[in-house]
Length: 174
Image (cartoon, rainbow, N blue to C red; front, side, top):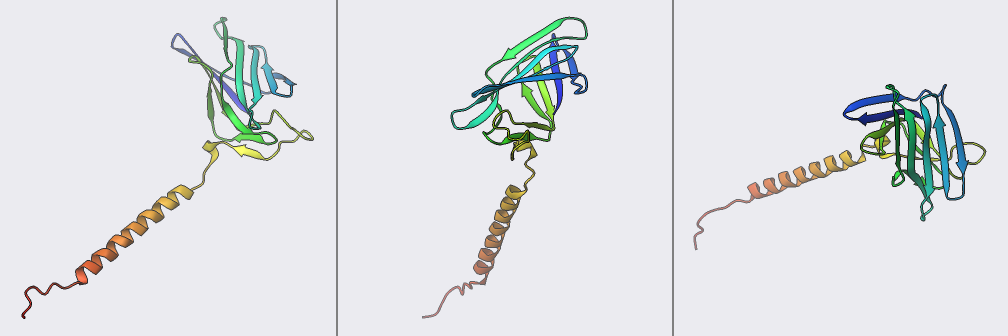
């Protein structure tokens, strides 16, 4: 995945693109949680913690970050009450479009070409992906709405033609 960190402290935005060539990663897998940790020269740690829901689904539950900003100051934030990247166990979660994970008021993560599977990985390969709603390019709903409107117009035209065909003779003689 591509990652971009957006930090806004005192109305001064700081944007940091994570370079995969210079970033180390580690992980820890437990039966109910999984952790992905990223770090490099500026990022002390960036933790993504996944959890299992009771209905056999996983999601991103927590993000923790501690890093050094360009001005030399330290920045840390944590949120353990998230609910992003939800998918069934045994499958992966995929989102090709840009997705924003709002961790706090001052910290957001933009992801690009995301694909994660923290649980039930077999042979080191991703399982069938659960796609995010941003990637859903189906045009089924506009087709249904268009067909419904077309049908309504046809019914109105037919009703008008039937109404015009009826002749009103006026007064009839006895």
